[in-house]
Amino acid sequence: MTDISEFVDKCIEKHGKFLVPILQDIQERFNYLPEEALREVANRLKIPLVDVYGVATFYKSFSFVPKGRHVITVCLGTACHVRGGRRIVDAISRELKINPGETTPDLNFTLETVYCLGCCALGPVVVIDGKYWGHMTPNKVLSIIRRMREEAKQA
Ligand code: FES
Image 1 (cartoon, rainbow, N blue to C red):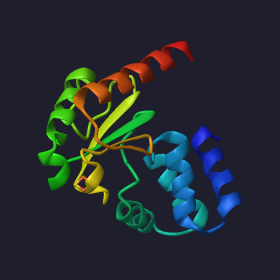
Image 2: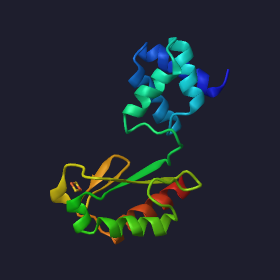
Image 3: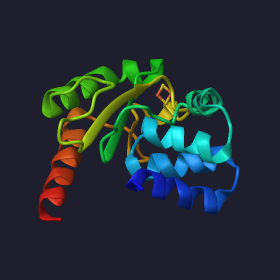
Image 4: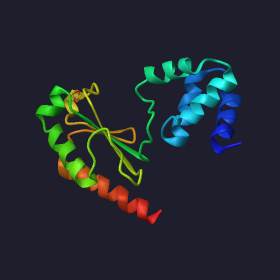
């Protein structure tokens, strides 16, 4: 039995037939939804794989490619864009050498963009591992990233 199938077993024990919490646990454990895990879920719950994919693709928070341990999301909605959101994306891209939608090869960081997080007055807004940072600047975001890198080295 692989790590993945053991983990899927535990999720099903915990959540029964509730697919979304099962997928959330898998995503949290692996930072994405590995195909092997989705096949296991379909087999164990005796539902077609296409239905598992149907649910997984419906929710934007699920990913089918590995994500970094830290996810940085920069808002490029109109309010954030006019206040410098694009410069923040460019600064992060240069620092981490990845484009939006990509993950660093060491799987430490994923960079994403969104169009309005619903808190425009705080723009430009950046979300790092679920924490919202308002009035962000390229310098501020770079110092946060560098601090995270230092902490990772010391861990
Ligand atoms: S445009 Fe960025 S939060 Fe609305």
